[in-house]
View 1 (tube, rainbow, N blue to C red):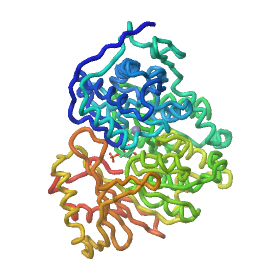
View 2: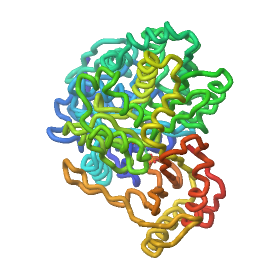
View 3: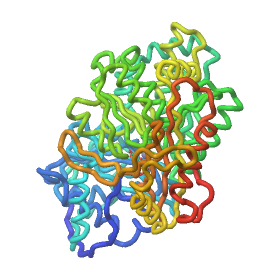
Length: 554
Ligand code: G6P
Ligand code: ZN
């Protein structure tokens, strides 16, 4: 098919700075004339050497409203900038982990993932564009800075004119003058990878031998529905009734596709009512996960620690490779540190954001990592992976049941606490508060810093106050101001941080943690109440934000 290239004059937009996970804005913002085109052009302008000319990129997203329009724009603008091959998920669908896997498998030069992750979708909700590099991981700051710089100086963008939109539904390769578009099945490569990691035979046997064991997977109408169906039903043999909300919808059925106790309330209620043995959910784009049972909620900080504990005992991928090292984001609880210590492994504490794990993985020093923000994963790809974590739990449950029949999520957690003690953890979120008030609160707390040391707040004596700063051990880049920590003499911690992923106002997060070596049966909210009160007192949060209650507690 012949194509012509046109150049369109444009002017920069303010605020096209990619955050932790790309550029996220309301759909109506992306729909402004030239807004999306400018940003896409900036990505191609800034693509790391050797650049866009002749490159292959993977394109796909979580199916949210406006995604398919943007896939077409990426193809037109990318082709005019010299991209030779677009590998696109069928109908534009690729979960974030599937996109990362595809970039790696096909040795593409990068990928563009269209998602606002766990933020709501639809004409009045959010959209997002994120660039991943050739290792399959989110672009490092050097690249996002270059993209931002390009958005600041842009004067024109280039696009090819096509007679009709590219057909995204038919599998196979379509040739155009100067470039190819290859439409791939969204699920198959990812399922193959997952099967190579876990012991599917063991899980199948466990399911057959334990008719009482029930699974309920809720995709929250996000992208993981088809992935979940293929893995849980087609491969592992769970009944169709193990799936809920597994058809991707452009507006996620009006729900907030974030797997936590607040937004996945439908799942939580069903798991309790139906006495489900393993309940699980994933977010809009499939990289987050939540795991629970009718009698236990597994906090993400514990989940990654448990997976690390059992990895070389029963997960074939780690039995083959061994564990190279473990890691968590700074606000994530220190449970995984205890596993690392017991196994004699290196442990890394990185700033919030999955991209910080990538360098460690590429350098062969990190196998399993997680974040309190419902992110869990390993070096099989360079994104966190919701389905991976859920299958990991199935694999562990199947394994433990071989020697302890009727082992459950709860019994596995009890065993874990018995071995390591319990790091009680909770997070309070205050969403969409006034940005100036939130920034002021953090600044004032920082300024108080050393004066607080030695003071006793609600029974806890402050040992240190500092801003988390991270020097990447591989490329030695330094990230500052990654969260304000108030550390107490008994090692309890309170961390204050502003979210990097909101699209309106500011979101304040307070992370609260206390270690107890022997008492592990207290409700986390009860165990942490005195520390929560200390956090509210020391920060004067309600004065700065006007909020008396958090919007979400995890
Ligand atoms: C995204 C990133 C995660 C990160 C999270 C933090 O989901 O992929 O790696 O933990 O954002 O979000 P926040 O809103 O706390 O900045
Ligand atoms: Zn996500």
